[in-house]
Amino acid sequence: MTTTSTNELTNGTNGRWLGQRRIFRHHAPAVEDINPEPGVVVFHTVSTAVADWAGVRGELVRCVGEGEVSYEARINGTEDHCGLSDVAAYSIDKIAALAKVTNDLRYEWEQITGRHKGVTWSVF
Image (cartoon, rainbow, N blue to C red; front, side, top):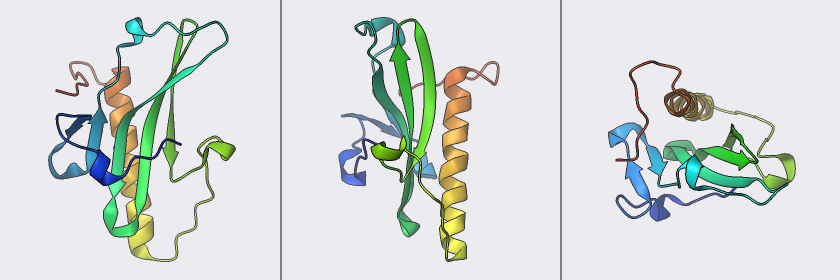
């Protein structure tokens, strides 16, 4: 997982924060502008969700291959395990943080894929 620190998430430079929600929308090239080599998949983090009070961070990653686009949500995972990790919460705050980040990533995924008609995902 390409984890970015909160300090690297700078408004205007790399994308923008959505108000107080602690969701950062990254600048990423349009799918039409990505021409991967045969057999190669190009990954871009398109959104990062943060629950700083509990150290929980998640990313919505776009995967572009030969004529195919897919998404995956990674929450505090590692690349060795495809971005997945076991979830262990030892406090109400930690489980609340996991729920917040998971819900934020779901919200962004729905926006990007156009699940809700009339809603457009945009970095600007």
